[in-house]
Length: 210
View 1 (spheres, one colour):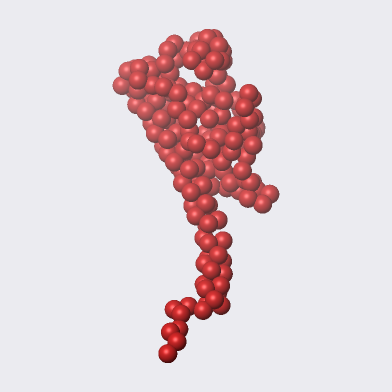
View 2: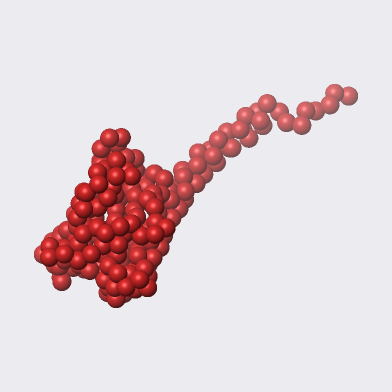
């Protein structure tokens, strides 16, 4: 008596077709979950550094700043007040440049950092920052920073400023420049938005497509 094969050729083809369909459905979903985790992780890292900058300002009784460099790195610094704003003193002990996340960037935009009642206002810039370890000079200005007083208050240049917002998205930095290519789903980019209360320093994360 001739033995029957466990599966016919048609059955194997059908199984492979179903598996291919399931894979095509699950891979994009898995990728979106991974993307969301990258953005959430980046926002968590920034929020942690904001809290650390505030804690060091209070504990050491100094002015501090979380300085952002080129849209993808941050570092904690001691700063001092000047007649025109703030100036760099030194990097805080134990601090180093930290990437906000692989494949995550903070692009330039009119919704980033400080937004006042009359429109966008630039954050306090920090003069004479030592960027020598990044090849950016020994005395350059940092136009993006979150500054804290020795009492732990966020210092802002406009009393009408709403809560500070930091928007990050998945993207790739173009080598040799400060511009980025942002990831799009269809025609839109998903942003993770970190909102920082300018009085308490508390943070919250939301998401928006644009």
